[in-house]
Image 1 (cartoon, rainbow, N blue to C red):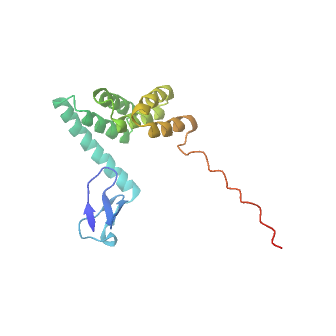
Image 2: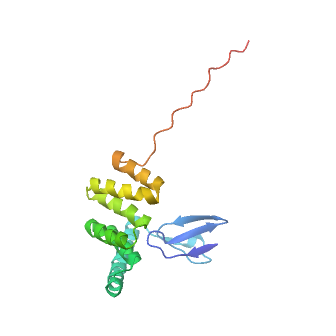
Image 3: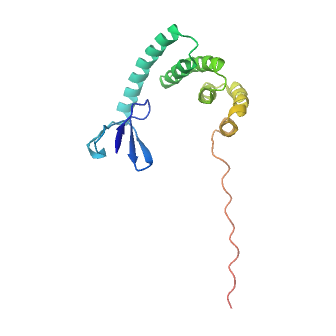
Length: 168
């Protein structure tokens, strides 16, 4: 069964039984097979995302002029600004969203990443400390990212096998 879902990063989902797989940059409609779907190249997909973000950003600006207390619109505006490379605008929008809804974990997560991107690691660490109240596991991953540059946990130690028994 195929479903067409319009999402910013994933154009379609491939559902097989209970498993759902994202199909990036695909134009798939109900009843179509994957072989008949047009899959866009990476540059085409990026161009389409930029166009969508530009349109969405203008819609969000109009929405925020009507209601400045809409935290979801501030969050979405920050995400679009980040996709367009406007990191300082992303930080301001996400801060406004968090002023209106301090427990909005995705906004705080994106704010930490944007602060890291702009080189403001001290401010990012402060935001990680606040995030720890709402999502301790995500906060520890982001803390690790800020310290080491990677969210990978310590590598597993190789298991030592017992010495082979001597068969007599």
